[in-house]
Length: 274
Image (cartoon, rainbow, N blue to C red):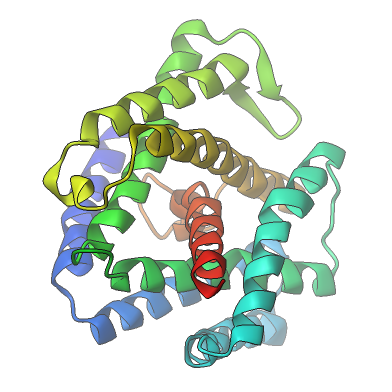
């Protein structure tokens, strides 16, 4: 299993970096659309949809993505989507997990599917296209991907070494409070370490801001992981799909990244609108 995971990672990582730094804006949007539609297809397994419902949802997500991109210049659309997305991840999902609600009804899974997938796909596009004192959008996106990866890795090793107190045993028995603390430490060290890199220094972001980012991004990434774990547990499946050998599906790889990208870009878009 470990060998399979490593082989898949060695193939995927160069492809992701190539797409992130070398593809044109149009090609990047098409890549994001393809990934979003694959994630939508996997979402139907979490919702236990088959047949017409399954493919209708995939088609709906695929159609909604370009429509939202086109409508994003409308302030009202931006305000509604941004506010609902932040509320979804910061209020609804924590309550959902705390109460361990098994919300498998089609309308609920339809709405949550939209707010799980579409703001994330918009974030992948908007973060990459940001020009902030320098063309650093791709670096910003890579930074957030790295933050989530470090949080996940730090939590894993800290949990294995020090883990004694379960974080959410009914949702994900392997996660511990000590692992979550390890994630905070790992991300904080990363932020301090990269603050002086040229691409990051160009942003003129203070060390305090970097630490605040770490303190916000880390719990969001943990929550995203728990969120998908709970949905899979409710659906009675182990992985969202078997598309990525050794890793499960696209949702399994992106679950922790989704709330970080979604909330951060929506906060930034609201800030820029004021």
